[in-house]
Length: 247
Image (tube, helix red, strand yellow):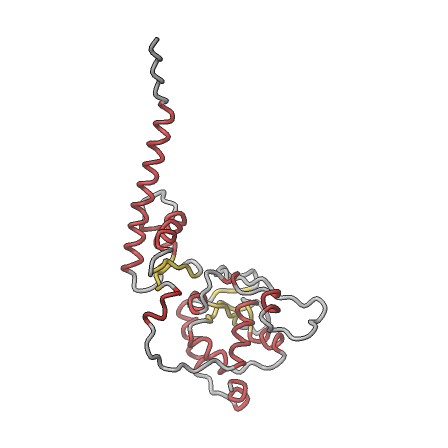
């Protein structure tokens, strides 16, 4: 006796069609994001990419898919903060290496100040001085602002309304970090031999955050005022103490 044919499951067919449609839409969105990133002259913010994708598209899923597609290639998709960009795979850097002009290294004072800003942001100059235990030269902050790794965030709601400082996406890119939370913690710093001897009781390394949203005790800087303020700050005459600190 002939066996009856199995009826087609319409629900399975619809699910398969929906999955195929979603996959096709994801591929097309990834192509759009790829084109945007290749055409961009600088890293693109995730919100800008999302704005150019078809309505309802999950930008994070698209960028993650594109990153996976490029993972084994010579050019890879990289994220720093909320900005995305293509860069040469780390293991192929030697292929493109050429003679480079030796760059002046940051002073120890500048490195210490940069580390404090990265871990404690938003932080004021007075707070940096309290943590370091010594005065911070104006020239030290000048250098960090010039590198583009540090920015003026706002003003602290405190007597004198001091400026607050934080890191930038350029800081993340230079040090190969996707997000500020990738900075090493206390255990990693100990493992690297950066702490000698016993640490004070209760000593710890804070969990850093570079959230652009101003804190409750910060007031914003207007764009024009911030630019003028920064130029005025950079043009201040350097004192002998500042010069010694920057060495």
